[in-house]
Length: 127
Picture 1 (cartoon, rainbow, N blue to C red):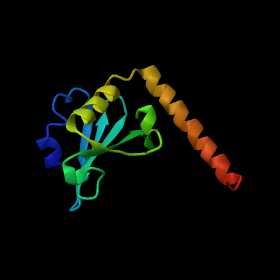
Picture 2 (picture 1 turned 90 degrees about the horizontal axis):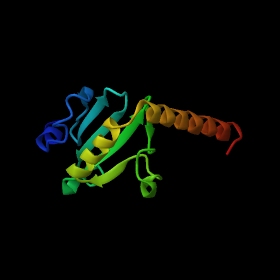
Picture 3 (picture 1 turned 120 degrees about the vertical axis):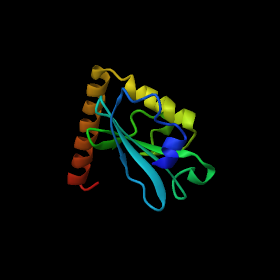
Picture 4 (picture 1 turned 180 degrees about the horizontal axis):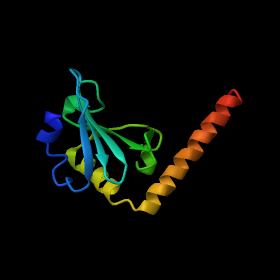
């Protein structure tokens, strides 16, 4: 996590963060940030991450333990992770996460449940 802390990505968010887990290994510097509103953000940088060799970050967002792209911009909705992000772009996503209302979080959870139900139906129908 030293690289993520070194780039000050988490500074200023202490009041919003429940926990930070260092999941780094020899290939990636990786932190899993759990916000007090229950949203989790994975921040990754490394030789094999999207943009890591250029010093950029890759993120993934988790709601109720499920990876989701629902908070990414419309043009990025096809990807589960979003890479090639500057520190400022990661901070903008963190701002979006901490500013979600309870109503917005519940709506996102409903969308995830609906998505999972549709995936199950497709599997059951052999698609």
